[in-house]
Image 1 (spheres, rainbow, N blue to C red):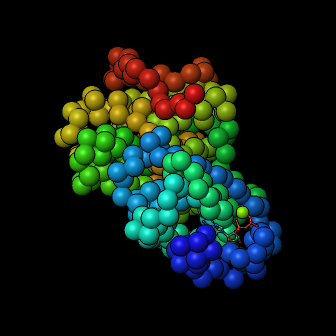
Image 2 (image 1 turned 90 degrees about the vertical axis):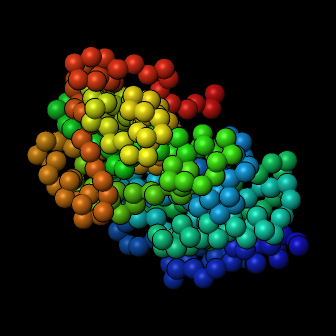
Length: 312
Ligand code: ADP
Ligand code: MG
């Protein structure tokens, strides 16, 4: 199968009317709605770095877009258009079938069109998805808006994906925790609603502690969080025990949940936005003027070894 047959077979789908020129020309031409600002993110998934090669191709496809959807969710943006740079050693029809099915499953859930890409041979599979969307200039969620006294919130159940990945690496592919790794649920709708309410937000890709530290550093403040407030899933507590589950929730990557901050006056509105979007939301701590992140369990410090994944 040549490159063009491959693109036609697996990647050419109907696109949104905002796409004036899509797959087949030298570049895509897109109409951004009047009065909106363009938002862009790109994320690369490398085999054996971001996912084990034994992960189902459909999950690899789904995650490749979901990780970008999560970035746009953290900005309060509406995702609309993606491009796909796909590098792989062989054009395996079964793998491409699964991969494209998973990729378009995520795309269809969020109304995203594939507008172009690049297909190349490489020694191992590398998938780079660029996602574009748009945002209201008055409601951009940034990392730098948190102030002392603001509450700190997290969506969903952090830690599940890291436990799921560990199980997949041990050859156990089926289960709730494994699905949390393979099919992250980017909080896109909630991000859009929260953008008018929250003071700051970041998505959790490298671990809650590491990503919250980035938000605090950008905002020039610090925080104390209590691990007893962490919203652990029953599956994670059963699997790892409570304190280990807390460590995974703080340091495990790949959750693609949102960590947000809001003033006390905005707290009730944030909870009702979460409820409206069907998203679980938990307050885990409070921002303070003293910089740095302090992690406690009641009145005692709670120690973690490492605070998140780093490539270098
Ligand atoms: P060029 O040689 O100009 O870089 P290509 O031959 O790489 O163009 O691509 C031809 C067309 O197919 C372009 O419109 C490109 O955006 C699209 N394309 C290539 N690979 C993919 C892919 N994996 N998914 C979607 N579109 C793709
Ligand atoms: Mg090209």
